[in-house]
Length: 221
Image (cartoon, rainbow, N blue to C red):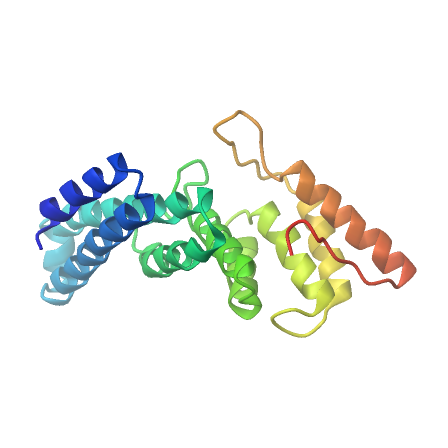
């Protein structure tokens, strides 16, 4: 099925409130965009790829693919938790193309490296894929200015020993780093990262560490 036919089908499904099926259609288009980029890159000489401007033109396909992946990842979140695997699949498809020269460190944009990896980490965490989530949070926390929310979410995994060795001193260091971060990530509502709820979660970790206590967040875990 051609790209336009899939897009048309996705639009029709969306109008019928079949958002997950619409997202799956868009994900197929995104995967095709990324595959086309890889084929074009592989079949071109590096100098010609840069000199003729083909890289710039084909980067447009990568941007489109990432937009479609984000749409697919967001669509199921308003639905049942059984649809979360589709969201994680969307991020897994998009992440390898976040370092291809299309401004991956644009921290105010929707597709910057830290934000994409943070979202992937949340999708993995929600499915209790803690090892994968921890990798994504670590990537988001260490790239560029670092993503404060990724530091705070990753700190919880480290503190509890989920997805890797327990590292409570490392968790405390991540919380303090997030709270002292100068990186600001604007939201659509005008508020900024780090999320106040996650800062409170980090403070809970620090208090628990001072007491040598366990900690759990039953509303999200």
